[in-house]
Image (cartoon, rainbow, N blue to C red; front, side):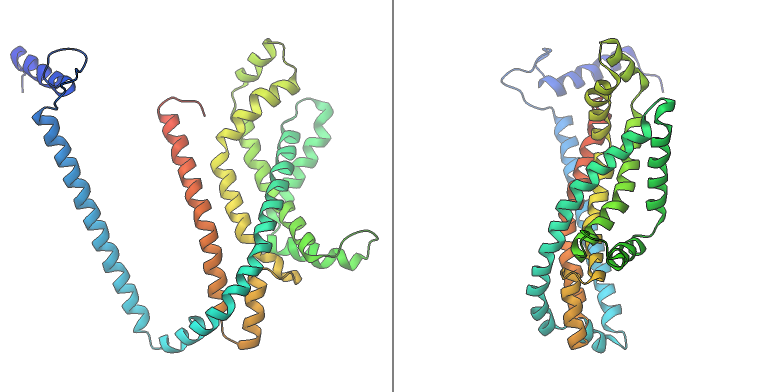
Length: 311
């Protein structure tokens, strides 16, 4: 379809009226009033948003009702409800699980800091240049390959059960400390690879520009490369911390009384598995805020990247 010059002029004037309230000026004045076309578009967007919300709510209710009917109508539901969803044992387990959860939180805070520091050191060692650093690069690569390949549960058993068997003088046998050490060893290997990916994503021109300004290699790494690398890798780092928070429950295999072990004690006495459900829900409640924060940070960085902002 051919658009005439007069039609183009009228459409341009109409669009200008959208932005200026029909005043004809390039800058909106105090008496701004949106045009009918703009008001119609806004009404349409609001109606579409309300319709989408209603459809999402209805589909969620239908799905939840179907799942409820499938579970409740199952032949073994009465026995399952008594064994896994007992209100009596839930009330008994909740305070003890919360008391044990404090150990998990402390492990998260201490091991999280240790993992970030050790992971950064390993990542820097793997990215050092020059033949003199070849043995250090090989050791760092061997460390990450070994602990990323070794299952965490086996690492915990080796450290928590094997170290005390050596009977070394001055070496602790506390299952909490040994369990935290195993968690740090495993997660520092994953975090080191995250940091290394961030360092290698920085364009070499950044380092060259820093060197041209008189900075040494160490100063260029510290003041130019690492700050950008860390900012780029914040979302995956937060994801690793979320996983670490959940895996702190594995220290219970050594006898440490955390949230999982507190639930296990009650289960062993009552033969009712409700305390496990309580412990699981407590971990979920602790993890969801961290997960949502990770999603928010990721979305924020994506918006800044799309707008051409700094990372």
